[in-house]
Image 1: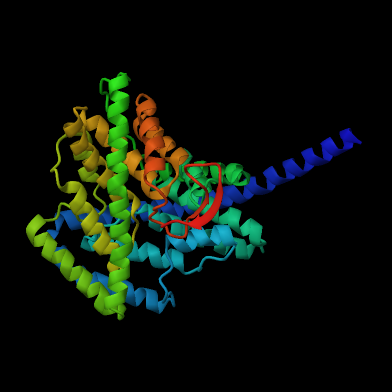
Image 2 (image 1 turned 30 degrees about the vertical axis):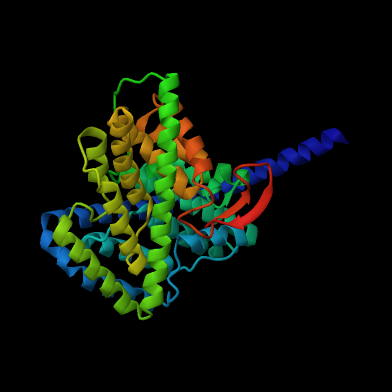
Length: 416
């Protein structure tokens, strides 16, 4: 009887793997192509803006075009990354037209200089494409949740070139304290396939070689704990800036066209004083923090530009701006605490990333894929303390805190 049960279980597991391998293959190819095209479009828009700086004064027109686009495809409630997270947990469908809408809207935002990222848009594109595929194959609700996670991982991987981080991200970010292990094989396969497809299009992985001297000492451990405390403190401020910006824009400007015009006007006023340093995704500022020097106020200004951009209705994501904030704040804190500022810039990226999405394993993998394993111990220390000290704040209020961060306790509450 036990032998029979063993072979029955083995058969079920083999069937599961075979089924999800071909699903991951299809999603990986489709999401890889779309993700690569999205990557290329964003790069082209950014290059055009930097070589034609006058276009930033067309930011109000870009905002109006985005609002009109979302009305045109009947996405009046403007679904975003929170919608994707809810769809995984509640087994809902993602709007099919969200993929083309967020694709175009994000390109428009970057073309005219809005301060936003790409990864949030990638998650939405992946979720929408996966939902479309799920409807085609008549997937049930539980299968749809797995499909959406596969899509999220695949487009994230194609866009940022970190397949293992992308795999863990979609499994960890939905519910803090719960890891969706059943999705490991599908997410990993779709992520790796998408990564390979994107490389065929010429999209290069995000990797920085630092080659900095590093030795873990008791003093450095103490410095890293203080560093984590300061990173976590500002991460809470950044999250609150993002939430209250969205709240205030919607509270005082009910008309979405007026709302985006006001936001664009505020951004252009800031550009007059601070030039165009904080426009776009900002990976050039990240590179400056890792290899050169940055201004001591860069982290706050990037947070302000991003809060206004996303809050008033422009599209994109918050992850790359989080990298900018983490790297520039890390650089400043490194100088203040007597550490190598370029090393703390790198550690600041993964620390801030962990704080705002409450995903320590994903953050650790991000550090390994972006910077190699040489500094992984220091990153692990900062990530661990950042995870606890940042509390239950998150960029994604749909994120569910299933288990407490400070005790073995089931709390099941939404992130703040």
